[in-house]
Amino acid sequence: MFVSKIFVFAILLISVSCRYLNEDQRQYLVIEDDDSIRIFALEDEADVNEVEELHPLRVRRQAHGNINTNPDGSSNVAAKIPIARSDSNVLSAIGSVNAADGKGGFGSAGAGLAWDNINGHGATLTGSRIPGVADQLTASGKANVFHNDKHDLTASAFATRTFPDKPNFPTFDTYGGKVGYTYNDKIGATLGSAHTDLFKKTDYSAMGNLNLFKDRTSSLDLNAGWSKSVSPYLPSSRWEPSGGISFTRFF
Image 1 (spheres, rainbow, N blue to C red):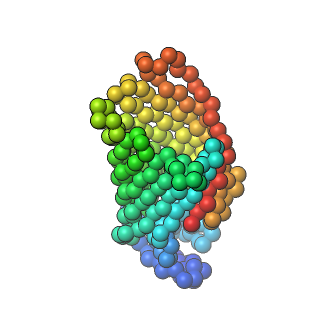
Image 2 (image 1 turned 90 degrees about the vertical axis):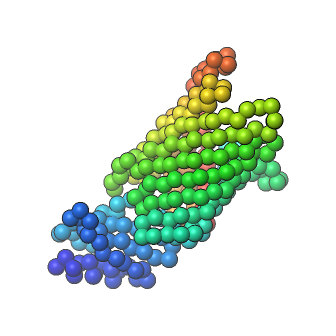
Image 3 (image 1 turned 135 degrees about the horizontal axis):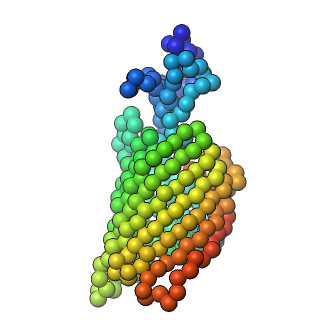
């Protein structure tokens, strides 16, 4: 009976290849198409309407990217090109341009490598350039702490070394992390902090996100929150509000 239900489910997925796995006495179905892979958990008595997808995000298998807007009118562009893959992991080359003003100017640009796991874990190593200011090298990682059909909790951390253009200015490090929660892929919140030893400065942020519209090619989001910086060199420290609407186009 169970095998026949798997067969019916596979027939419904035209033009994709499926592999059936057993792990820790729980049964899984891995579905792979030209664009991505997805993994599902199945119960012994499950039918096609009771399949649980383990993670809402696909591990993309083809070159892709996005363009999104900033409140000041500038844009951010990011692209990812897979260069190696296995059943559950993808290694990609990545590149980005941030705060592009449409006139040839930009806030920063970078490139590097990214590893993505089908369970929502990942890591990146990137080098970036801030014109007229500095070069930066950043290592970051994320772990999906909890996920079900409604809730998702992810923790991430990073470390950045900055190499200033000014020869008499020392190299310095910044490190930090954040925790992000998403409900029903619609409402989200993050708490984060970052510390720079050279300036004895710690930045804190508490942000919220509401997805207003999303399909396969675009997303419209409302973002709002507060942030503050604490340092003995700053005359005052208070929470400052920020917010805006961002539009993202996927390609």
